[in-house]
Image (cartoon, rainbow, N blue to C red; front, side, top):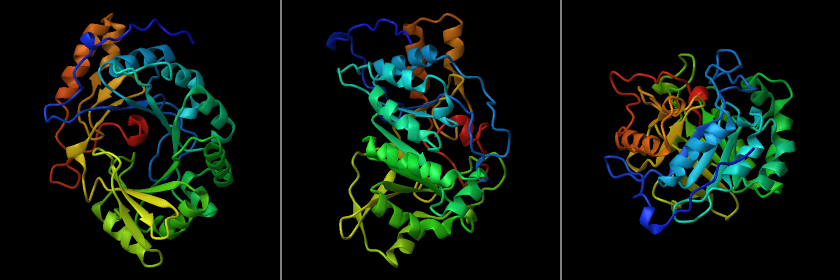
Length: 345
């Protein structure tokens, strides 16, 4: 895939950091490159597996991402749907690896996947410049896992993908597990052992109202406090300091020093005050929060012929108006117009 010439940045032309009206520095861009998925997880997806929204050409994603990077984005995470379904994903990562921030540093490039196609792609992804990978995995028991994904034989395939990614050095390798009460909360202890045995970071995520159906209620959320107490009954945990102020997960190590888990608690302990993220959907819309009620059509302006300067000014204006926080569980709360699979993780 050909890359457009990139202008050389200099100190005189550097933009100030990309910030919102609350002074939060935005340095993390999540880019969905497809809303297609080869799984149909029962807590996530009720519709068909095919795309609901259009996808851009890789060159168009690259141009839009470059604009964000020139404005100060330092981390890009490719998401889906399932991003490994996207033809040319390895080439796209290779082009992203050529980009430099205004300070001259390489991008931090990550990818979130369900892991089904990861075994054969781990090597090419690493060679292209991918730094690390996160695998979404909601059970460590094979039967439970396959009842969630509704794909027979999926568990051993994902396990091989995780091990291939770890062996290729796509680390720290994180495993994301969304917990639902009465559904997969019996997997907590098994995941704690999995973190220690497989040398991965397991992150439990409180269930958010982002599913396609109407499954979410406050009662189904397994909270951070409950998760810590559950693991603490059989294994001693030690809370670890955050690596950076905007880190979303509370980190815990095991007392003997082997293994790490994280807990992302957007429902019981919201972290909006330190949010550093903005999202670009597969059809080129900016979303400033997972729970935004409004999307901003960046790609539409590109298609209409807007130049880079105009597009960059639009990004700055939209990010400046980023929401102060979400309102999960509050009276009048509205789910976003898109479910998680159509927004990007």
